[in-house]
Image 1 (cartoon, rainbow, N blue to C red):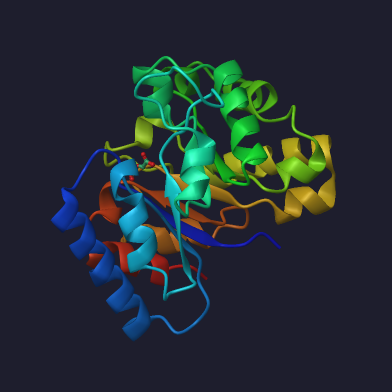
Image 2 (image 1 turned 60 degrees about the vertical axis):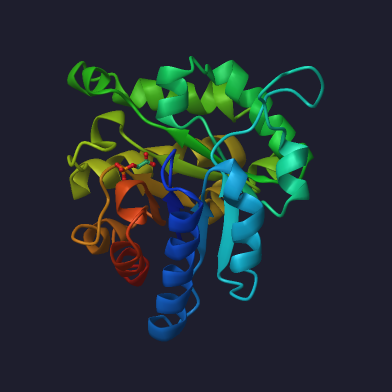
Length: 254
Ligand code: PGA
């Protein structure tokens, strides 16, 4: 069975005080209200990671990740942050290929595959984000786009490395727009992704791979989405910036 996860992608939001306040509210609510084992990953901006690792160290249910890493090992790459650096400050996860990175920073599947290799090498778990544009869906190309992103970005891994990864399906048209994939659309695509993983790595790995849904997931729709057979939790943007809504989403995990 795949591990169920709720992850919060803070993007380029919050100053230091706000970030610390949000973390302490989340940890407080979790300890007061959530007694069952849940897995939560927070993706703050890089500069807060060290502090937030410390602030969350007493709650083993919370792990910290970065929103991106370099495709280079080290050296003269001004402004970049390497997978090894992230690992050294207590990061355990890294988002790779978020649609904003693909769209605004021109990140290609090939470049992303290099980032995934370095993340794995430095013992970070990649959370590989995939998703189609509205135009792809309207042209009935959404399955092809997803297959391509998986094939070119992550299916070069051997089975042992792939098992360290999480997939996040985030239809681009649903990110930050208030539009969510319907339950049918989400389940259909998640099942398709699992089927591709099965074809490549076999049934056991497919069954054990966590596939998160992302795109305007909130405390109103999380229960329905998380209840779907092939949806193993969510990658939450906007709604992860408010402690009450984020903890409510965590509580929606089955
Ligand atoms: P959203 O973002 O929840 O604000 O749509 C999701 C994401 O970008 O990961």
